[in-house]
Length: 156
Image 1 (cartoon, rainbow, N blue to C red):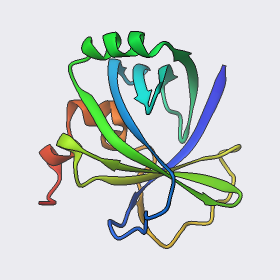
Image 2 (image 1 turned 30 degrees about the horizontal axis):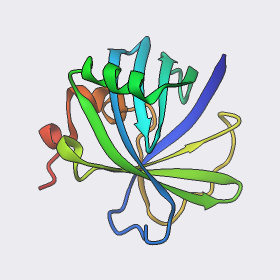
Image 3 (image 1 turned 30 degrees about the vertical axis):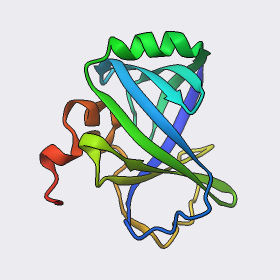
Image 4 (image 1 turned 180 degrees about the vertical axis):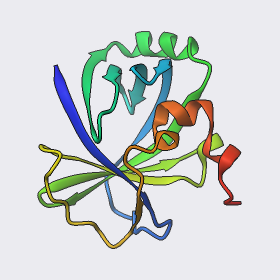
């Protein structure tokens, strides 16, 4: 069992992404129960099945397994709502930030996540951080599948 300790932030749309490495991600949820989410994800040419437990503060149990890409494609067909996004990687030592630029029904949402080793670990926030949304359910990908950003945001 692994623990995921993660903080999440809304970021500026003016963030300089040019030259940063990125991945294309398609994912869907087989379960969006807050006590146990089950996600299938294709990231570029690699596929994963991930099970996450209930979030306690910024920590939750996480189990992630590489699966055959053909299996992932079949599992994605079983999901009713999907998320597509580009994930950029920004290294700000000692942390690696994952910057998600959402597409489709979640277009206009720009989030950054940073994984930590301990919940009390200090993080130097880059200048493009606007607001922390750690623990706000509506920003969890599993909830964005159900209630997309464009359905509740005031942004055009």
